Amino acid sequence: MAVNNFREDEQSKEELKKVTILRLFSYMKKYKKEIIHVLIIMGLIITVNVLNPILMKIAIDDYIKKFNAKGLYVIGIIAIIMNLISRYCMKKRIVIMSKVSNRVLMEIRQELYEHLQKLSFNFFDNRPVGKVLARVIGDVNSLKSVLTNSVISLIPDFVTLIVVLIIMFVLNVKLALGALALLPFLVFGMYFVQVRAHRRWQIFRKKNSNMNAYTHENFSGIRVVQSFTAEQYTSKTFRELLREHKRSFINAVRLNDIFWPMVEISWGIGTIMVFLIGVNLSSKNEITVGTLIAFTTYVGMFWQPIMNLSNFYNQLITNIAGAERIFEILDTKPDIKDISNAKTMPSIKGNVTFNNITFGYDEKVKVLMDVSFNIKEGETIALVGPTGAGKTTIVNLLSRFYDVNEGTVKIDGIDIRDVSIESLRSQMGIMTQDTFLFTGTIKDNIRYGKLDATDEEIIESAKAVHAHEFIMKLEKGYDTAVNERGTKLSVGQRQLIAFARIMLSKPKILILDEATSSIDTHTERLVQKGIEELLKNRTSFVIAHRLSTIQKANRIFVVDKGNILESGNHDELMNQEGIYYNLYMAQFEAIS
Ligand SMILES: Nc1ncnc2c1ncn2[C@@H]1O[C@H](COP(=O)(O)OP(=O)(O)OP(=O)(O)O)[C@@H](O)[C@H]1O
Image (cartoon, rainbow, N blue to C red; front, side):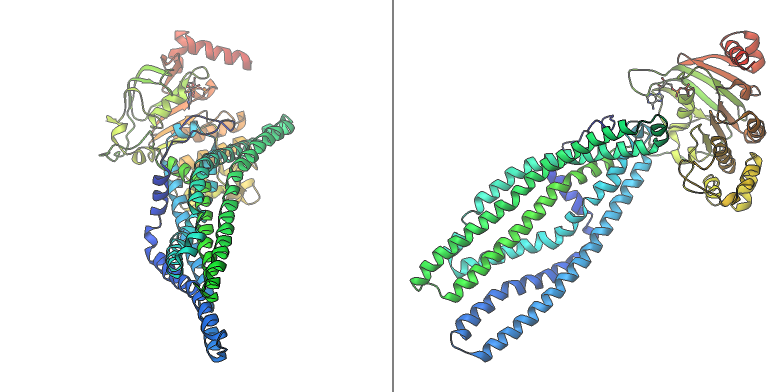
């Protein structure tokens, strides 16, 4: 799928509609029992519907004409009982099918969610979150009516159609031909309309996705919007997207609207033909009045399923675009995945080797060129260098968020591509500057580091990183509620919570990417002690722009121009008077 933002429509794969439809309905296989139940119920309903006109014909021709009141009563009572049963069945089928379609939607949504979680950073790098949400929520919802009506409408209406058609031809061939005069034109017209309608509905779903992406993006960045008083600007953009959305809807729905008049005109003309031919035949005594009345009822019964089937077809065209978008994601393979015989990473000691690593996020631009280094277990490595030099990229490769283009990354001598991602990442602790807290309490957020941790373990970790003090000052302590963006806490406080979370997970390799940049000097001193605890006995990578925080590192790598240009401890690098020396002096002068 292409890289895009809220202004660009997503590209869609040209998939055969038939394949998508079959794949969608394959989710219903599991519910054979329920579907057979509904089909039996529908069989009953159809039988009652088909028998009604026959009862009427008998009533008119055999009882009304011959003034047989007793017979008429019997027929009336039979009709009432049959129709009451039929009404009850109608309700029942809707209840069963709603349950089935809801369960199928749940399964599709769960599958989609689980699959999305496995997709690599690369997938999310290129796609606004709002567009992903549109697929998980909107596109899945759009399938409900199709799934429900597939069993309620498709099979029963088809059966009704065939049965009524046979009865009509048995009753009178001439009348039957007259009633169906416009059917071939209708079939042709529908095919013509659906090809175009399908394309228009695809466009509509993409516009819907764009609007979702923009809404999500703007409300996530509402602070920036408000602080730059950009409300009018964003409203204007939203209005434009809304207009495109509306236009695409009207374009699509306009075609759908042609469906009904086409069916109604064919129905109407068919009925007129039956009356014209019927009056003529009846005057010649070729048919009875009862047959003519029964026949007109069958004409209605023939066109009603056609109407329902057109409705279903319409829904299918309208919503199949949603199914296509869902399957497109389900078919997207994660870039980073376990090899077929992936081993479990043994307990990591912490020896890390980068052998001649070359890497670029896209083929054209290489971010790292032939990078090699060896790190012994327990070492603390600081990565410094200008913005965009490739520091984060190095730790991303170590965590296997991306695969290298050339070379190998080894931990304790094992190529990280040979072990399962789960066994690798579960032994690593990664903390970035952009601390993400989930909606819930502080305790819940710390517990994310070890889902089965006791309250004591949580408090212990918080104490170790000096988060305990500020948490206890909050009104509800560890039970204080925070939200997704952590807006009720300062940036530094959020980072302390994230420290506690990572401490709790006891990682074998620790990565702190600009993790202390938002902490004030006082808190930094507190946290520094906590970090020292965190760094003890484990290999650690610390990325920091503030060089004062990394002076104690065993080795400092100066990353620039796609490689490691200097390496050594603080004193060694200062003595070299190279890049590090200049960076340090520049910061020192700036502070003083
Ligand atoms: N997901 C991505 N897709 C494409 N290019 C990327 C991606 N992430 C980073 N880059 C590019 O790779 C280069 C290195 O980025 P990286 O994040 O490793 O730098 P850094 O040294 O960590 O920078 P900073 O100190 O600003 O965090 C930059 O030119 C950046 O634009």
